[in-house]
Image: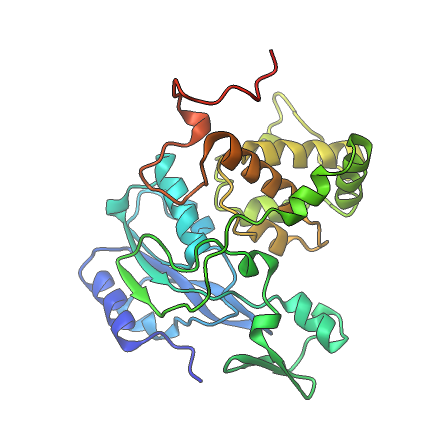
Length: 316
C-alpha cells in the first residue's frame, strides 16, 4: 500500500509553494532506519512527491517551526502536532496567517521499541521490518499496528487536528479523556516512595538534551542550562545536576505541555518523562480547567488572571 500523499494534498502543497503562500513545507519522507520516517523540508513544488504519511511518522513537526521564524511555513500536523501549534500561537510565537496546515487524522504511530520487544531483538537490531497495510512485517511474523503504538497514542485526546487548511484521512479511534491512571498510581505513594520513583527514572538520564531538542515548546533562544553567566547547572551526569535540569524543565512546561510524548520517544535511555509531565498536566486541568493546545481562544492559565480562579490549593 502506497504511503504517498493523496494527489489533491500534493497539489495543494505545490500550489502554496508556487503561489508564494509559503516558503517551506515541513513534512515527512521515507527514512533510512526501519519504522521511522524522517522530517523533510520541501521548498520546490516539484519535490512534493517525496512527502509521505504512515504509522512511522512519529516526530512532532512543530518542533521545527523555530528554525523558520520570519518565514511563511506549511506544515503537516497530527492531532498532537496541532496542539503544539496552537500553544505556540497562544504564546505569540506564530500567527495563524503565516501558517498553512495540512491536518492528518492519526490513529497512532508505531513504537519501534515495542516491535523489537515482540520480535525478541534490540531496537537497533531491527532489520527487514516494515509496514504491510495495517500490520508490521518482520522476522517471519505479522504484528498488528494497533498493538504496537506508543502509549501517548493509545491515550490520545485528539486524533484529528482542530486546526487545518486541508485535512487528510479519517480516524475511527475515539478521543480519550486525559489519561491519569499512571499518575494516580504515583500519587498514591508516600513522599519518599515518589522521590524513589523520580530518582530511579533520572538515574538513567545522561543529560544528552534529546528531550529538550525534540520538544516543540522548548524554543528559548538560550536554554537555562546553557547559560554561563550566571551558570544555573553543571552539564554533568551527577544525580543533582540531572535532577535539577529535569525538574526545572518539567516546571517550565507547566500549563504548556501538550502531551505529545516527543520527549519520551526521543530519550535514548528510555526515561519515562511523560509520567512527571502528565502529573502537571492533570494538576493544571483540575485546578484551572485548562488543557494546553486544545482551544485556540483560551488563555494559558499561568499567563493570565481571573477573579474566579480557584484558590483552594494555595497554601496560606
